[in-house]
Image 1 (cartoon, rainbow, N blue to C red):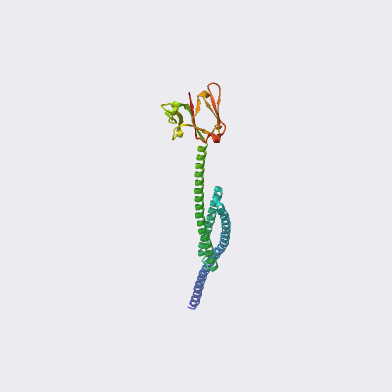
Image 2 (cartoon, rainbow, N blue to C red):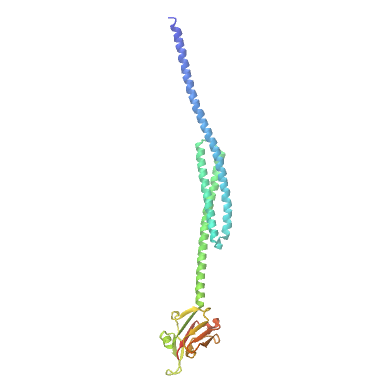
Length: 285
């Protein structure tokens, strides 16, 4: 029976040691997990710090780009009303570039905020910095919206002004063309009367009547030409069968015989001759 006691003691000791070993092993596993978690958190925080620094630098760079382009826009705005289409295009391009910088910066800050929350960090300085940058970007966003509105208004004003100028130019051009247009007709008296271009006035019983221009002549009845290029007209009858019915300044023209059956009307003073808008040449005896 003596041997039973040592065996029991040995068994008890062995059982206690085994429990201690198991507890120690569990503690080791727990410590390893904690160490791994700490390592991961430390690595996450380190990556966050690196990303934080990089993101802030990029956002500050973007703000610098925005400020420089805002300066360009101020210069463009002063010259916008000159109607330079290239300048308007540059201004639109600059506004779009600023808009892109703002959006990129806001996206970067939003991503950084998520990283910050995931890293389970507490930093008042970080929070204040992010809030400050976010406010600055929102101010820039509002400013760029105002610039877009102003740019659209200026562009619209320039377009309207240009359209008005073009309309005035068209009117002036039309008036200029009309003022420089010569209206003439060469025809026998019967044709002129049939077209109601001339009529007989005065006289008694058909004697002593004078051929004069009818009132309210229509431009469509005449051949047109440019006054400044019309210096000579060939009339296909003898000079003795030519009568200038319309009244033109004396000395501003001359009828020159050209053989037996042709006559040349030579205009010597264009301005004086065309004070009368219509030239009516009656042919035939």
